[in-house]
Length: 87
Image (cartoon, rainbow, N blue to C red; front, side, top):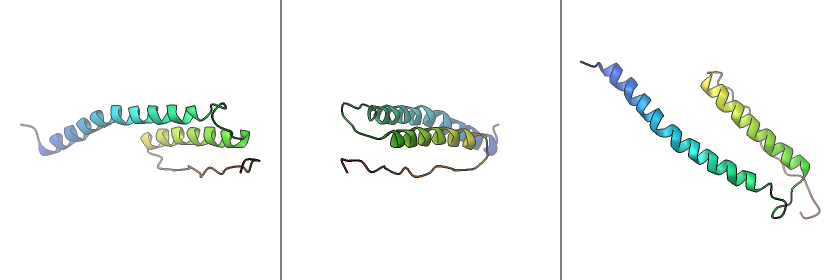
């Protein structure tokens, strides 16, 4: 007979296994959409803005790594936009 604790642990595992592919798919779609913004035929941005976006993505990736390794930190910062001749 399976104990209640074992059943709860199996339920937690089943939820994890079910959610990971869905959430990774959403992350991949969002990543592709963000990457599309790098197309200079359609968008205008500064080098500083591009660097901030790349850094934010790196921080997010590091944050996921930290979360799965129990550090518990959340170092994400807000992106600031540069002033351009078009603003």
